[in-house]
Image 1 (cartoon, helix red, strand yellow):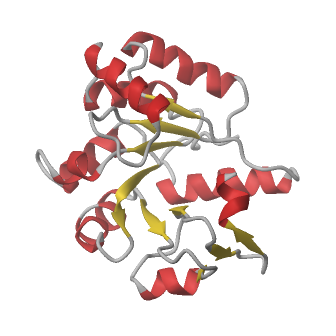
Image 2 (cartoon, rainbow, N blue to C red):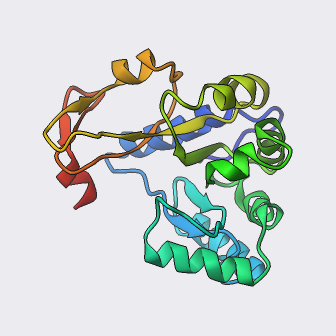
Length: 216
């Protein structure tokens, strides 16, 4: 259902939005399982991605292993460490992406040093798109601090949405809504956020969700 049609592939943001819209039309939440690229080894990782697609995933969140994943907990940190020890690198993760991207949208999760380092964000985006990635979450690249990445690489040249990271700083209830994001220069498209307990988000349908409902 989410595979791109023959001919030119749709922009990454369009595939992501179509996956969520399709699930909504079915009256359910979209299923977007996470996996660590290269864990427990590159070959097994590709089989896990295929099993996700076979099992009905609407999208796949594919982590790029990193030695200091500050936005992740101990389980994902341990998986990243094991993947790195097994020889996984960015290219190995892209191979996993290639193996399944024609069946389901794949969203990479990578830390900013992977995007900004090396040959820079343009090269990162070019390689991601060539592997079929539909998007990337950069959890340590906050709204308002990611202009160079968004403007110079992702949306204009390669159609990969740079999905930002929003942290509600105040411990008291506050709101982070679409208009706030737009005022910070965040373009239309999917967004990824983490709330501090006590924060609230205004939803597109007029509802509001508290951080306790998101983080448990």
